[in-house]
Length: 302
Image (cartoon, rainbow, N blue to C red; front, side):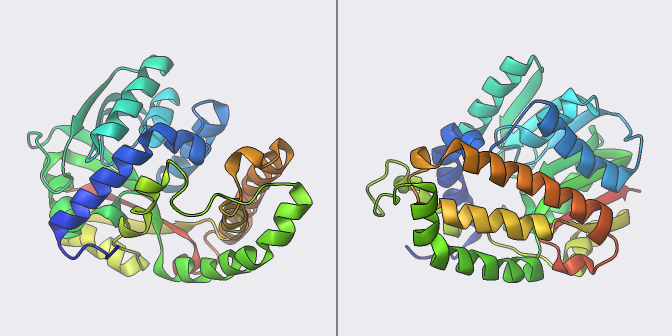
């Protein structure tokens, strides 16, 4: 299937893919709304805002998905009144179910991030996780973020892929694919079904088409500056954790997910958390921002 050529095609593919992925999204990515999930998002917030993280009375999430970022921040007491948006109605349906289970009041609206249906000066925080790389016209989107923020309000976007970090990550991924037959035999996992035989393949076929940007720190910060934001800061996170995580995900992608042992999943998850701490306390802030896999951008409305 050919990659989308126009902004409208990009939006259409993102809507269809995320609608199809919504029901299994939390399970696929091991999304947690307990202590671990809250500590993960709070750690990101502390990196950009410092300790203690300020409270934001009214927050707008862009590309909220199933709610991982904003619902955990709400549980941690960082945000108050929450409005969650996404281009995918299916994702927002899953988010509302998660919010109801967690007892968090939330308003939801299916919108295009480039045309936000909210008044000027409405929010104290505009945030998102792993969303900017899906948006066709980032300059227009950042202008909208600025417009709906109150003066002094903040943007906070995390989980954006860096161009160099993504290139580096290809090496462990390729090595893992080559080693996959030996790994499956060792953990006694069955080989994945051939392409087209899985019920999820109808939307998995779109997965490679939904990412339209990878960033270098300068280019990511430039979008915020062009929208007249001040105090623009771009930070990198996850290097060793990324290599470890993508190696394991590449291995797991070759196996029937129901045959992967629980012990392996625990090793992969806890190992990722351990490497994440090494990145945070040893590497981040010391190595060039551009080599980390994930980028975070924050800025302030003048």
